[in-house]
Image (tube, rainbow, N blue to C red; front, side):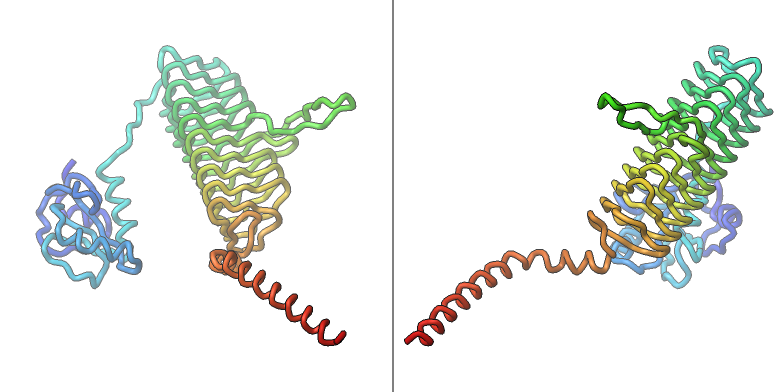
Length: 356
């Protein structure tokens, strides 16, 4: 696919400068010297050191055109102007690079229950299984080797990649993306110690509800509730290798980065961000817009708008002061020992003077 700079700018809703007839066929990064004559690159406003570092790469690029913010002087190549160059670039990538999407229909090797309901435009891949009374909405794609248990309801325009397992009675909204190996609706981890010291399983008879526009990364797990629902609210984005336990509620537009683990019955507020490897125990409330930095160990509730770091977690301002002081602790300890020895000497001398 090729578009002229003029055509591309029109589709992006942005003005352009320079040769509007130059053809663009793809998108590339400024870094690594990979951009060629038919590529589009972008430069965000130079508000950080990393962005400022990219300006010389823009000067040297072999790309055909660039997306730049207003006021960024540059006339060597055709320029598309955008208040948000990164966002405009993402939209350009979506124009030039259409992901593979199989044609509608059911592969001959797929096993689809005669009681399942498939809406128009559904695609079921090879060796996938769709259980009794399952319902799959229009335009949804089930790639090969997906297992959909009985009574599952999946909305419109979803993508379930190979290796996904959706257990019985789970409900999934529209435009949901489940990447390879995602498990939705497995039993929550619930046991009681029995009189003989063994562990008695607590029945996990609830379900999982995933609302619209959720994306869940590869090999993540969302467990079903013991009673009621585990809920992933609309727009939440979950990275690879994330564990969401039973009866958790993940708020609208929340972000859970790789290897986050959330214990049962915890609540993650709307727009909250949990960095990589954050651990959240059971029955914790994390407020709207709160942030937990990577590897934080959460020990109690975090208020709305809070920003914490460390394990056990501290307010990020306290945490930064602590670690700024930490390298000085060894020297301070040596100085303390020296002063303590000197005080003991002075006390001994004072005692001798009193007794003389």
